[in-house]
Image (cartoon, rainbow, N blue to C red; front, top):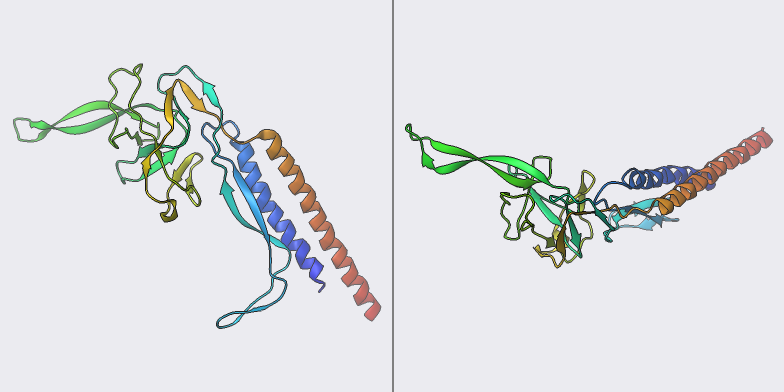
Length: 247
């Protein structure tokens, strides 16, 4: 079969994946702290290449090689809420899951008061530790916000500016996205260090996804998808004509 048939089929399937990337960006255009993803394409091999043990087979067309995250800073939104924080500069908030010990990094500073029940050094008449309830700064999903020293932040007066920690990495490439606004580091991100950004109370960071740009990318992908299907249709018609002539 004509190679153009496979080029068109691969192209159509890859444009669907690209649409998913930009569709997710559009869905999160109003999500605080969201970072838009970008699609990167690469041409497939057009001839077989000899490998160590066997030949590497050729491909046709182009494929979605990878997606990357745009970590550029979004604009501030004035909420007037004392538990909202915006990072002016580089860095992330750190939130920890006490059950697993996993620390997730995010630019979404919409925080809440979370109750934490813990043991005290005092014991009751039966020798059991006395429990106490304190309120700490959390993200509303059961995780707690880390302070500059890496501990939990106990809140006595929510109106006061809290010692919210800002943490950073020298390289963001390859950070694993969890949920919509959380990120987990990988080995190549390097060591964790205190960020240079400053927490600003009463503000949140808007999504950096630009709706106009994302819609233009969607239209571009739809047009490319239609052209790829037209290529498939034309290739099929050519093959049908050739088969009829042979008959």
